[in-house]
Length: 369
Ligand SMILES: Nc1ncnc2c1ncn2[C@@H]1O[C@H](COP(=O)(O)OP(=O)(O)OP(=O)(O)O)[C@@H](O)[C@H]1O
Image (cartoon, rainbow, N blue to C red):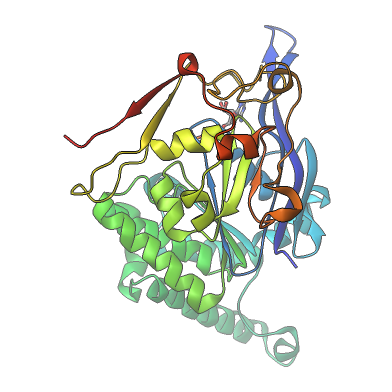
């Protein structure tokens, strides 16, 4: 059974106008009907360019953004329908690691109290109800403090820091260490799922791999499940089992990481992939480059039909402009079932039966200089 299953999730933000009375004049359709599921112990990578709705989706799972429509099943419960008290209890099991470690750590709190805060909020640590029965109140408090301290030190050690960090403040650490502290803050609550929103994009390239490796190690040791949100395809490839590609609030393609990187099908995924530099500079890069024409449309006024049709080099008239394609298995029953594409002409594009129009994209065969 999936640990997280999102069904047809919509998050629409109202656009308000008016000096005296706020009027809703429209909606930003940040997430507009996305479904995905994550198996326990898996890493799901969510990619797409800035503004496609990745962060909004992650925040909606934690109910930090209000859900307009849809279901979010976590460990057998639909989070979209939980009252705030039940959601508060679930939240310990669902943690988030943010992009900007400095911005997400309170500069006036030392590391000890940053890590303790979650334990205290959720009442985690200390003697069990049964053990507590025969104890005086001060003894219970003493044991709780001792146990919470142990958990905090344990979380710090797991991310490669020691108890020496407890009395220090966020600004005394490097960017990579601060992100480790952000990870420890999530870990201390012993979550099942961690949503990592651009976990390394604020870090130097040399530090990025260390933090990604740490996330992988922790997953191996603790059986964690991750939703990793990133605009950098190389980062997502490195850590993910399954990758989903979002465009303008919709999921356009989903496959196992290997399948997606070897055979990207959706024209948007292809254009994203073609922009990724080849890692080895001594290898000649002869790939086709697909530079998309036009700007990203506004999620307040998304195009009709396929959201991508206004920029798609493979667009076919009528159907693409009018009918929104479903995310469906590539090659139907004959396919792997794990590769899904939201494109009316996925198979024909893959076979070359439909060719891109030269007018709608600049196709450059890039030769190494
Ligand atoms: N609270 C909000 N109110 C109104 N619009 C919002 C709000 N939060 C996000 N949006 C809009 O929703 C759309 C999706 O934003 P989101 O931050 O989820 O995208 P993203 O893919 O995570 O991009 P980035 O990588 O830049 O964070 C954008 O157009 C954004 O301006």
